[in-house]
Length: 144
Image (cartoon, rainbow, N blue to C red; front, top):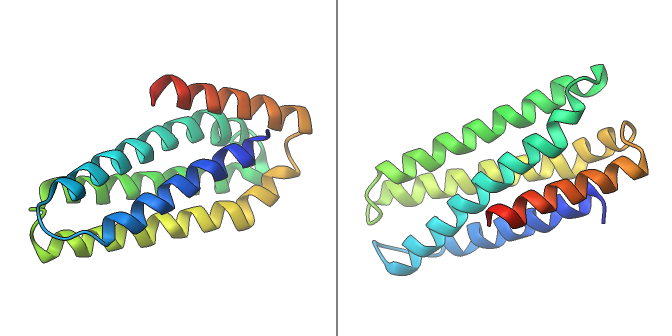
């Protein structure tokens, strides 16, 4: 497995949770559980990705701005999660923020999968891609 396959696997988990979350309504156990699971996945993924994908790219001139952009998007996602935590789950505002979060996360995942992966693929060797996947997956397993 390489780093791109590892990250895509977690992207699929996030997409699935987001789809389920925006289909919920009210202050229900289902909504609470899905939000808790999504929040944990987003946090773990961002931490693992920043350590084992973005950080190794920052020293590369051609990838530095892309890596910083990805990290900045993680912070924007964190801010939306914080807004959800501060908003009453049974309000219409909560669902609107959840939909904004879904849009932001999906945009971020698309950016990574359709441009960032291709660009960084020219920087990493095949061996590095596999080593990064091992470190990334190890981090995810240890903290999940």
